[in-house]
Amino acid sequence: MENRNGKKRSGAKSGSVKRIPFGAGFAVLGFAFFAALVLSVCAGSANLGAGDALRLLAAKIPGIGGLVDTGGISEVYGRILFQVRLPRVCLAGLCGAGLSLTGAAFQGLFRNPLADPHILGVSSGAALGATVAMLFGSGAWFGGLSMTGISAFFGGLAAVFVVYRVASYSGTAQTVHLLLAGTAVSSFLSALISFLMTRNQDELKKIYMWTLGSFDTASWEKVRFLAFFLVLCGAVLFAFARELNLLATGEDTAVTLGVPIAATRVIIIVAGTFLVAACVSVSGVIGFVGLIVPHCMRLVFGPGHKRLLPCAALCGAFFMMFCDTLARTVTAPAEIPVGVVTAMIGAPYFIFLLAGSKRRRKA
Amino acid sequence: MREAFFCVDRLSWEPQSGQKPVLCDVSFSLEKGHFYGILGANGSGKTSLLRHLLRLLPSEKTICLGGHFLEEYRQRELAGLVSYVPQTTVPEADFSVEELVMMGRTPHIGRFAAPKKEDRDAVQQAMCMTNCLDFADRSILCLSGGELQRAVTARAIAQGAEWIFLDEPVSHLDLRHQTELMEVLMILAGKKAATVVAVLHDVNLALRYCDELLLMKEGKLFCAGRTEDVGNAETFRAVYGMEFEEALTASGRRYLVPMLYR
Image (cartoon, rainbow over all chains, first blue to last red; front, side):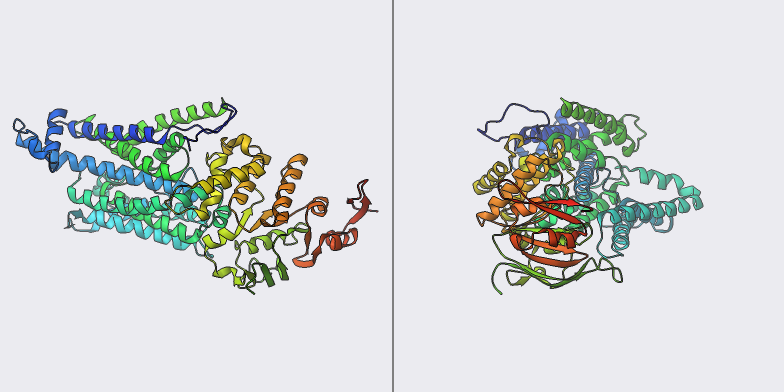
């Protein structure tokens, strides 16, 4: 609504809504996304320059690919780029987009600023699924996905299903019941994981590292798996942007404006849960991104979900690629868990944004 | 029964089975183009009745609108016919007043469509009627209680529904804004643009602006009728269980002074 034209308004009064124009803001995000992509692909122990990386990438583009000269670049670099770095960068980007998108949708749906993608217990369920697979499963792989990942995916879905059933035990599932049931089920599942970990001391480190999240097992199969869910669930969530806006002024109001609340809630929860379960199953539990990125985007672009959801997805992708690159390069050859990096960078920046917005509101 | 009016037939409701019913055998019908006031003591079932009429509570085929049970409508269809101003609105997102009022147009705009000129016109007109234009681009988080209530009322008007239901719309407003809002509602009903149904606490506002009254007592409809017929000290005495002294102002209006003892 920034480009309202020709209306006489009595100056900039206090409390008036000021927002960055959507087009410009989205362009900046897009540029940051592309920069992070190139930076992430170039960074690493093998010394692959940005120019070489770009030429290798351009050569893969159908049509103009043949015009690009990749003669001087070693074949090893090509393999590093396409088999190691690019899938990892893509997976990080998709995962960041999925978590941020779902976080934004859940914050809107539950009308709770503390809501994040994991609030309905999907990550605890996934972690338990992964733990069980690591302890008792074989190392089998199915179509490029590990047993651990598949077990985590279904564990996450099952946990949210249980949470929903518990919350709707007395009639329809109310928002507050869902949040409480999510917290209760999460605690129970976490306790089970802790129990399993203490009974199996040898696997303790492996399980713990999984729960912190990492992209070091990225593959094109995982990228395809996650991209499928991001496109599908993302489209569903975006289609419900309008309903999420209406919920911001209360559930009764949303109903009287034409939102069938129970069905809408189920659709958003199902779409969000499949997306987050897919994210968690390929990367482990990465916190913070899904909580903070939507808030940052809301401060910048306003609360309208038609803009918020795509911006959150793009910013989440950019942020996760950036954090993962730091995670694998700063202490190379050792890796820092990516969840640690997201919180260490994201939290101070968010506090900075929050302080700035308070000041503007007062002025 | 094809006429477009609300018809409530023996509506009873208990929040949980076995508990004391909140509504008990309530029957009445509402005709178009009036300004109805629902009055009664706290806990007499006014708000519950309103929530049933809005289908926010299940009415189990006791309420008809235009010859169809409320259950038969899709939520969006109903939103095109009935709008709602809640008692309080807790704003949680940084929308501007204009964006808030535009939400009222939701039932008329496609899922992926942008607002059309008629939608923008309806929004401007509603904001003009409720005196919201001065703060149209303010954040709804920075409004006073009265400004927010006017913005929410503008949203209900912009919705373009034939029926507007309001739950104590003026409780948070100062005298001037109370009067202004009641005038707006009276004009809407007077032009037959909408039928207004408002839960009110102030008997004198009801006498002044409503042309029909529904008086609730202990979950039952105590009486209903034209304001000049039922709006007198005797009825209110029975409804509220307290004394009222009837007075005539210099211009000949009736005024009721509530008092505990005569």
